Image 1 (cartoon, one colour):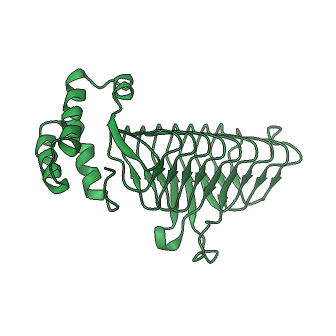
Image 2: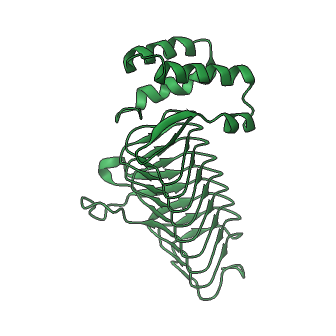
Length: 259
């Protein structure tokens, strides 16, 4: 152990921790944990289970990482939690491992801001460059794709998908899939246009944003049924690459799209 590990930290001898990792007072790290270089684990954090954490992550005090899933079917199988690089995982977050029935792994990508009291349940898949604001609750099997933003206290139903660049306002309940680029809010999530400001910040051109607006109108304002609108957008995506994420969303969606 190096001087970067506090003397009161409890670290299993079988844990694999890079020599550059900092571990604070009274942190607990279990035997099946792997932590990559230049990560920081603050005081009183708990990292257990079959958990693999990449480089340059900051895990704040009282975070609970890699605990058993909150699923009655779970019988202590060696399921996993895999976290990428450059994440900020704030105070009192809970990130659980997967279940056998859900693919055995929960994943969190890279460069995410996961704020205080966020819950990421078993078998969730959180992508890259995502913001989960305070008290967001992801039920089991939820997918949140790259660049999405979820406001404070958003609750997402099991098996739902939040698409790329989507933005869900605080206090919203999401019980169906949110398409890429869409802004959603309400007691039950409703579409409220596209995330124009977010797209501008990420370098989308004026023509690309106009194409996305047109796709939104096809989905929600032209009076078309879902299947007919979907076929229109699939055809447009052959020449408008920015719509390809919508095509992938249509393939993956199982809960139906917010309306």
